Image (cartoon, rainbow, N blue to C red; front, side, top):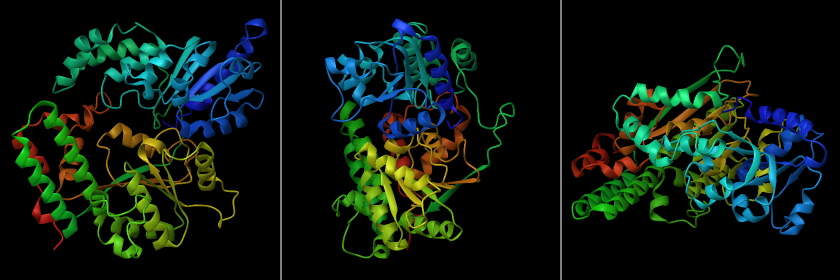
Length: 468
């Protein structure tokens, strides 16, 4: 993450295009998330202006026979993952010189339509770029390797039986089996870490801290009601109904910890929760109140920040409240924006040449839309307003700022609501961090396997942390 994968692939493209000339000359294909198409365009123009790049994207993109004509004479075609699925027929009609997947964890689920469409593409060479080959389960590593070297790790069922099951069920991560998997995949990996002295990146430091807050009385009452409702129903359900109720309750409790408005739906979904001033909306959430205080402090020192949330409604609310409270522009990048709008936002945040009046120093991002691929080194503070409960995902989001090009120390702030499941799960993550580089559990699904007693302990509100 942030260690030059983009530049390495661009260098690889130059070498590949120099070897592929004459009648056999065909372009390479790069598939990446929509949010980073603009970033790739800028990096390619910067480092390899000689390469002819074609962007296959948007409503006006060439289809059918016109597609073949549109890519003639190009060195690289770029498309998003969604377009690669929609235009499978066009893309599969070419045997690409090289097929590269950026943020390759997007094909981690081998049997989705998107993953299957991409696996069906033909190419002479295959490359996968990812800073997070394993986000949740070891099977995700198998999925990526099955793309670059089909069959090398055997079938998925064999890999599950031989490695995934024994490793993930073992309390110590089964070092012997883990080492065996590492020996299998290592010959095909180009991997390095930021603090490796051999590469001498001389990056500034990254400091992580927790921002602990309490629930407001309104949040506490809502939280307690959800827990009591769950506990009344849980013993009468089984199977999928029980799992569904637990996951739905998890989502409700996370929303309550963020802001009561997310749970009560007393806004219009765009941040206009009410006509009340920002300060009145902020006092309903201890998290939001503390965030405003911390933003005031960093802005007084000339700092810029990224704020990650997994809830689009929370992003809109944060944007409305912070812009009203601060009296300065606040941007929110989410999956509903066009590529052009995203590119404009990134430039407005990153471009030092812009006058101060035109720049934006506070950037809110949806974790799914903005958590990978972007270069946002203008930020020296990163806030995780709500937790994904997956260190790999959170670290990738943090590394939008902590990457090559960063010249300042990066402060990372993770919010934790005291007395709630946020605090308990944070404690669990800390206890198993030693294994996170190998395998990071199974997301939130492990919660659904708990007994009623364990669930009660996990969800129960600790009254001593309630605001009085």
